Length: 176
Image (tube, rainbow, N blue to C red; front, side, top):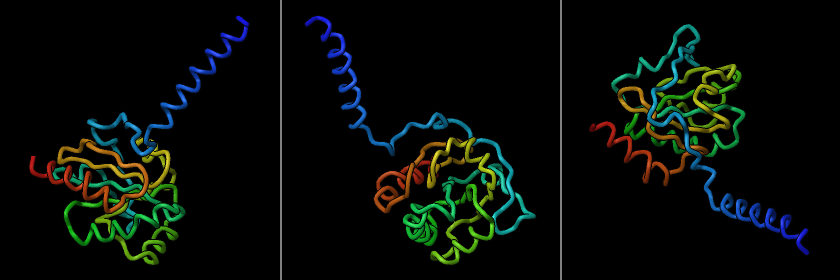
């Protein structure tokens, strides 16, 4: 009888860990970059390969960096939300086209309602995405006027996420 107690105890502990893990929201994965400066990069622009974009170019602005790709199914879901956000002109929206073909990305924007981004950086090999800790697209980062990451949204942005979390925080950062 005693020899079954240890395996039973181990099993119960594992069930406890599983129960706790199932209660967590996978979209709320904490990012170690929150409160830290944006990783340095200087990338070619998606639409103009001879022009570069870097975080310093956006200093003084609150901006959203949206990591997207033409091959990303969820990006298609969030794209109309981003197009609408761009029309509202409430926050600067910058794209990071991630591990994509330049032509495919440009065509994808044309086919899916237009280009909502002020500019898109072209991250063909995904190195900048790795520096941001991206493990799946879409992911979006809210960055303050000093170039510090203040919020990370994992998955497609929804109207609800914009209304309840992202835009209120962006407006607070713009005032401060």
